[in-house]
Length: 125
Image 1 (spheres, rainbow, N blue to C red):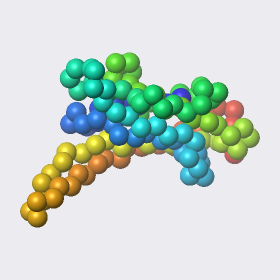
Image 2: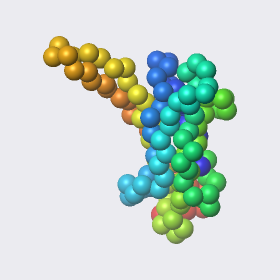
Image 3: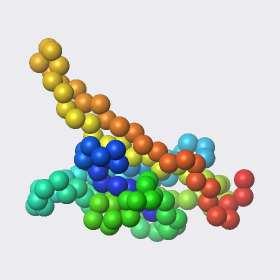
Image 4: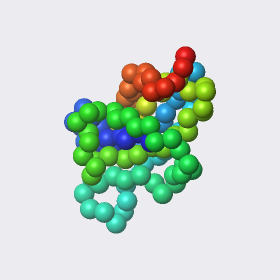
């Protein structure tokens, strides 16, 4: 699994929308969406109950070394394809602020963060 900071690492405090993991060929290995629980106070965000299957490799990545605070971390499980997956990249999309347009509509600019390519131990290229 990969751990993700539940609020925007830039300090805006905006919540995470989705997280996903891709391999070296751009294939999707795991995906998870996040939501705010109504029964929790404040801006606490937690992962939806919709999880990927439990039988996954436990390779772990982190979007930020300082984000080890478990109260502000969500997890995204992913599957590694044996003898095929040699590296991964973790992606997170954080919600932007909603802005009103001149025509009465509204728009939102979300923010995408990603890790560098992370080689997997023991994987052969």
